[in-house]
Structures are given as structure tokens and as C-alpha cells.
Amino acid sequence: MMSVTNPTLKKLQKTFDEHTSPHSATATSEADALDQSPEVDPIFESGEVEEITEDATDSPKTCDMCEVSWPDDAAGSMYRWTKLGIVTHQGCAQFTADVLAQHPEISTREEFLSMSKTPVSSLNKPGTFHVTVHRAMELPGTQLIGKQAPYARLSLLPWKEPMQTKPVENGGRNPVWINAHENEMQFSHMYNSTITPIPLLEVEVYNYNYLADDQVACTLVDMSPLMRYPNIEAKRWFTLSSRALLTQSTGQPRIMLGIKFVPTEGEISTTNAHKFRVHQLKSIGLAIPVCAVCMFTCCITFYKSSICDLTRVLNIR
Image (cartoon, rainbow, N blue to C red; front, side, top):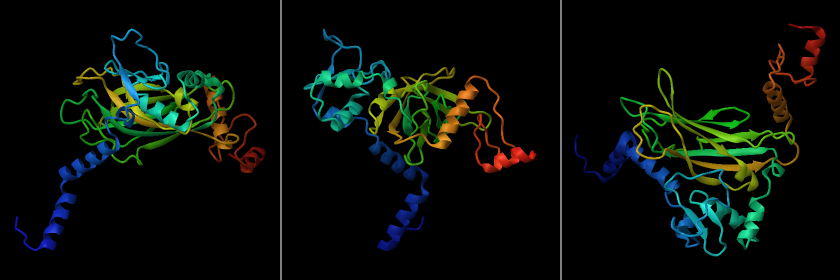
């Protein structure tokens, strides 16, 4: 390559090389993503918590934040707030710190427990779950040749309306979904009555394949803690399980998600109410008619618009 001596041309050539070199671009992007998802949560550098050793006589087994909803992997530790005495999983510590910051009136562990023990059924309400997929680690290797291109597919149960991220090309076993905005998903919790269940988030990681995508790992996330503490994001690792036969994993597969529940003010929208009725009817195996004009699924005396009524009266096919 011809050497460039002019300073301006040098700068232009450097910029061109940075933009055209896939290695440098990828390295920079991944570094930025890692900066946005630090390994150590701020709470562990604050001095407000201490690790509970396994040989401690009063070593607790239950997390005050989630109880057993969000278990850590076997290598995770339990932590205790030095002043309040609150005990949490390692993964729940930062979420607990954020909750305490929003509730400065909590001054004892008993006060925190009185809030965390509130039956979730009494907190069940319509709203939206905002979920961002950040990265995964120690995924099983399901591809014999080359690096796998993992993507995450998420569904809020029981509604089962899946959404997914883009595949991370050459992501291998430790993919990073760089653009958080592109990987943010919104799921409607269509609470309609007291029989509406507390939702679960189904998380599945697949390896993109031209022939058929292979499931790499999966898990179910209980959304109860988020409904108990709405409008506060829980950003943490969730453990994954896998039945992959060709595994190259040397550790526990896990995925980092940021999840927040935003309650809906007022009554549920007409569209969401309709979706809820459709789900209820389908769940009991009832055949649901579909309008031949607007292709809208109609539920018992519910019509999308007057054109549907007109079509029904005129018997238009």
C-alpha cells in the first residue's frame, strides 16, 4: 500500500480503514456493548452489602427479593445488607438496591419483607413488560463447523406472541446483542379479571441455520417480582437450561436481560380486551369465527366495526 505523508490524507485513510475493517468495527462495537453491561454491579462496589459465606451458621437459603423465583447458578452467593439486614441472591442485589432507592421509607428488613410478601395476586394488573436482551454466556455449541449465530426468541405466557432479536453473526457461545434499542421488546400483559394468571417470560436461544434453527438453551422467568415493584428495571443474569447433545459448554449457560413492568393507567384498551377474550376462548378449545371481509377474529357479540354488521346483514361473502 502506498504510504501517505499528508496529515489530512493520513486521517482520511485511518477513518476509511476503521470503517472498512470488519475486525476493528466488531471489536469497537463489542467493547461499547461491554461498557454498557459491566460485569460488576454498582451495589457491590458501594460497601453496602457483604457476601454470606457458606460456613456461616445463619446462612439463609431464601432471597428476600424474589424468594425462589430467580435462582442464581450454583456458583452464585447470597449477600446481606450491612445496615438493613436484607438478604438477596447475588443476581437480585442490584435490583434490590434500585427498589430501596425508590422507597427511602424502608429502614428495616421487616419493612422490606412486609412489602415483598404482599400476595402478587393482589398486585396483578394490566400493563406492558419492556424487555431488552443484552448478551449471553457459556451457551452450548450446537454447530460442528464454524461459529453459531445465536438469536433470542421471547414470548410472554400465556399470550404466546413471540418476538425475537437478530442473529449475532459469529456470536459463538458468548454473543453480544450490541444495539440495545433494536433488541428491546414490549409485551402486553392483558389482565382482564382475577382469573388472569401471573405471566411467565419464555426465553429461548436458537442458532440460526439455513435448513432449520436449532434450540440452544431456554428458561422461564417468573414476572412476579417485577409486578410487585413496577417501573423499576431489573437487569441481571438468568440461568438457562439445555438439552443440546453436541455441547461444548464448560459452564452454566446464562443470558442477561433488562426487564421492567409499566402498569397501564385506567381501563384496558379495546384491542387488548379483544385479544384477551380470544385467548380465553381458544384456551377452552372453542372454534372462533373470522369475518370474511375484515379477517378479524370475532368473539361473541363483538364486532370490529359497522362494516362487519352490514356484511352480516347483507350476507356478503
